[in-house]
Amino acid sequence: MAKAEKLTSAEDYFNSANAYHDKGDYEQAIKDLDQAIQLDSNYVKAYNLRGIVYKDKGDRAQAFKDFTKAIQLDPKYSKAYYNRGSANHDQGNYDQAIKDLDQAIRLDPNYVNAYNLRGIIYNDKGEREHAIENYTKAIQLDPKCFRAYFNRGNVYDDQGNYDQAIRDFSQAIKLDSSYLNAYINRSVTYTKIKEHDKAIEDYTQVIRINPKNADAYIGRGYNYLVKSDYEKAIADFEKALLINPNHENAIQYLEAAKQAANVSQPKASDYTMRGAASLEQGLYDQAIADLNKAIQMDPNDYIAYDCRGSSYLAKGNLDQAFKDFDQAIRINPKYSDAYFGHGTSYAFKKDYDRAITDFDEAIRLNPKDSPSYSSRGSAYFVKGNYEKGIEDTTKAIKLNPNSAAPYLSRGFAYYSKGIYDKAITDFEAALQIRPDDEYAKKNLELARKARGR
Image (tube, rainbow, N blue to C red):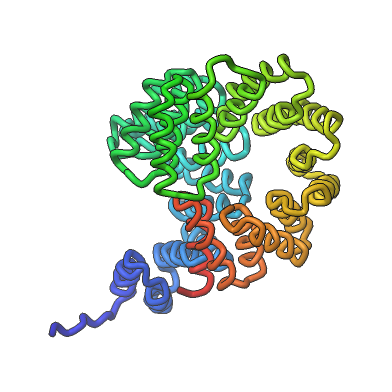
């Protein structure tokens, strides 16, 4: 058995820490970096790496200290500014993150990752033109930066510039033919512009890469449904349910496809059902078009008003959303879903007291309304009332243990309170329901790191 190499210099400990960090052994990496800094208190790269390790471990406060110390020791060290900017972004401190990335770029005008990350942050702030400028600069510096193409494509898609979005997603795929998210997002864009055959091709490629992606079967099935190819649509929705038997969208779409296969002349309810399916798929313009037809055929279709309100809400048109939810309530004052939508609209406006009032009414009308309990719990969390929030999300889970949303909300509440074991349990439960949920994956990793795994 080979004898372990003895570490003597600060550089030895730094290199050892780097290796341990790559293996995911954060505790040993920190011990080695502590030793490196003890041997050389001006070791800038050691402070920077220790900040990265603490950030990965979930100790953001210590990460900030180390990145700041590295900057103090070497104000021209661009990587420390980049890393502190990334940490600020993770915390939601967008303006401070941009300041750090500005400085990183001043020090290194060719810093591709800094431009890409600054683009992400500007997009998160809703400043899309600034985001595009940064992604474009990253691409100019590195024409092979497929992530910058992908990120810019997402912004163009949000702006409704679908042709440019497709060009960017296509270039990302050309640079990395296994880039799953690029295929997925391009297929969604193709669906929006009614290029259903091309959307089907992309979803098919996603399925080739990951045959267990239930959402890809649902997306492809939806396009078959719109094309009136009901047999293939039904087959895809059934395949999705084999992968995830509790997938609510697959259940709803399968029913819609089976009904559509047996109906020749569309009725108002058919447009309402198809509009509701488009809403769940995130195709809000198509949903609104069908729901407009439903309401034109039946002005008292309160479900159509409710679904159209939800579509407008998803598009950020709160004024129209409120009008539709109000109309649904006027037609049927006992329709709990409309109060849920009304409350959700208030939550978007950050008027959480009125949101809670609406959720109260939805629950009064339907005591088994799991989404309203879940959303009321989230509103209580934002107001700082964790006990009521946990009580509501727990009730939501009891009513519908197959919904990921209340697990995620309660998990984040437990994480915020430092109750990491319960947070981990909730995030794991959410991932059992939605295995591809990036939010749940990220928070599960943070909770595990915070607990000290």
